[in-house]
Image 1 (tube, rainbow, N blue to C red):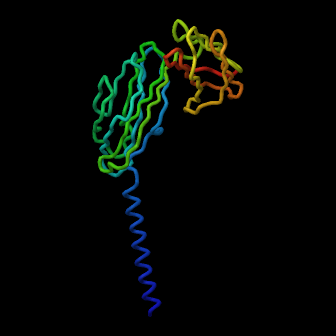
Image 2 (spheres, rainbow, N blue to C red; image 1 turned 90 degrees about the horizontal axis):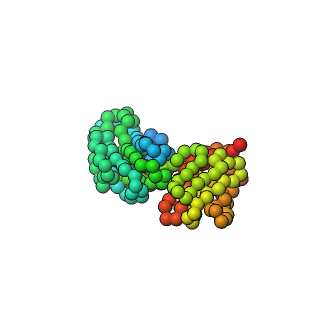
Image 3 (cartoon, one colour; image 1 turned 180 degrees about the vertical axis):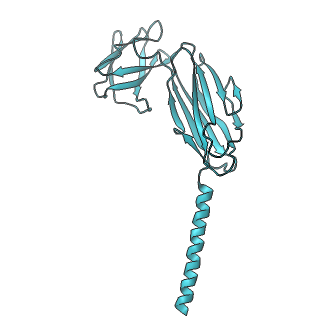
Length: 235
């Protein structure tokens, strides 16, 4: 009888522990997800415009209400911009806001940065915090990485800088009358790639012999202006 009673008590404790774990799991589960991830990369052309949107999906069993707040904005002054949630748009970056109710299963609601580069190749990084109003302690940070380039080909950024040849095999040149610094090459998913570069009288020679064939995002500083462009490595 003592053993039987002990087993009953153990079963009760086990059931209580299991119920607690289920409760904690249901409370801590995220009520939304980011379609494509909360850190995303966008590559508009210097001419025209592009909508750079990060979409949220309601993963809960009820209507979802999200709030957001600006974390930081590094955005070229020569670009124009509009910023939208799923109900309102403004021609500046909003400090904070509350999105319109998102139905169960909906994956179309988004925060959107529309870039109008006005012909200027450059880079922008925009960060916003987001959270469910019912779980204010669980905060995600959304990151919009926007790289505006002139496109594949002969890239003339100004009266000074030119990137050639493009496509290239093992190396290409950045030619400019201004100083060139801060040279980086990123994959289209934002991974920094191994490169070497040397300066000469006309600018910089970038060695890409360690890269596999493909398209990469080149970022460099010409004088005091940050530039970006797509470059092709391959035959």
